Image (cartoon, rainbow, N blue to C red):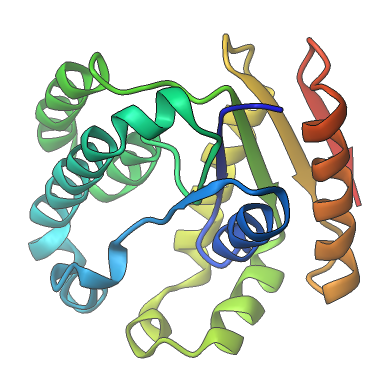
Length: 207
């Protein structure tokens, strides 16, 4: 069984639901992203150019603070999280201009040197249409501002991440749809891999 698993994917991919299921059924501590407490997020969706840098930098510091608080558990207990610290760069890359991103990346690298790396990264990949449907179903007012083009940019970043060689073991699930049976199959596949051992090579699973 792996100690520290990060579930990643685009907005509306189903990260939190899967992480909570693993926590409940397999006895992992659940480390959730605290994005709902960030008052800048709704403001960003209304005026992205004005709020992009303060939002991304606040997320960077909040995630770093949370991972520092959890450091002992990350090293000594099985933990599943619905975010991966590196996602700070994914969102900053599409939300910030070149100058701001260069500054952001410098600060990220300084903090990342002190962050615990996961034993396993799981990436959930869905089409833009399925992401939009999931976003609509969970009905968060501020997410109504999210455009398909924004989700498409993030999808390309996650595709690139899943395809690149990495020292961190990665399993990516490409979902053909967003129905409950597909998410159940993801959980069953992943739980078996967690229980019986993750292969040395990265995996790409299509469901």
